Length: 472
Image (cartoon, rainbow, N blue to C red; front, side, top):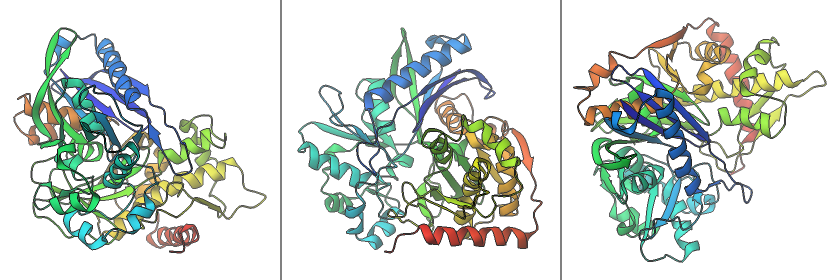
């Protein structure tokens, strides 16, 4: 069996899977966020670590398994979230700055966009780790013996007792990694004032990193991957042109771009995939499931995200209402950190069903924005994540895109990818094709909306987005 850890923004999911990628046990622990100032989002790194321990123990108990039954452990993680800790004590030096945090927007405006785009495939945006790390160093006084890492590095350090590593898929999200060179870029380190000694060693996504002492057993830690690249691998998108969308806290659309480094299309990113030597095109949408969470926790108009489907079906349309969820700015393809959320078209007839439907529609519209910006038209879009269970949303997505949407049988594709990568490293499977053969779907949605009608809906959405954009 393999223990797969999916450490996400709002919680940690652990799965125990067997050699057929069947789930034997599950564990989950919610993870808190704090918002100390407008635009700031933080985690407690110790709480992240505690959720991993608790969810892992729960998954093993659910499987009726012990640590001695495990062949390997794999990690998929929320990307870009930045942790700074002390090498001697292993304790965090500050709260972790979450990928959604916008405090470094002004720093990003001063950066050389062309250089960053050329070297990293990214855009200067607070989303990525480099300006977060620069902020932490400035506000902690650059302490001696500090170590930087994204969440994968933090967990690998704690699990192995001191291995300071990251993989290419996470390193590529820092704005410090050269896609062509496959390593830390000296010019970018100088630009951000970062000493390379702070940084983790870069390893392949599928490789034995060290051993984890767990309940009397020693288990190889054999995979690290950013959650979205892990999901691309878990969805068996192994050939160029194959695409997936993960509908989680945000929505992330990745397309396998093959082994030749592509030029980034306007508004999209190029990143390192979890497969060795493979690149991916990516669109990053900051607010997907988080929009429903806001309707639930911020406005109190949803008791549970699961009721959103019934509410969306209960009305024939939104009645002209659009909800642009730019609460953390807009990601792909706009990259507008100063954009702000907007609800437009409200009338006296607007009720909570229309607002909820508008929130779900916004999730699908944002995916369309990414696909059209990159001139990407996959033959099939493979979907995973919590919101992929919403049949109304998946049908609306297929209707807007004009291509079939296939939902994976197991929604936790990020964890599946981590399990697959770990299993490959220790010889559970011979190659990735063997893993692809066991991929299964739960549902397929065929487009049924006339193309002209879909285009009208998208045009109206983009008018609303224009009103939410900043003036810059």
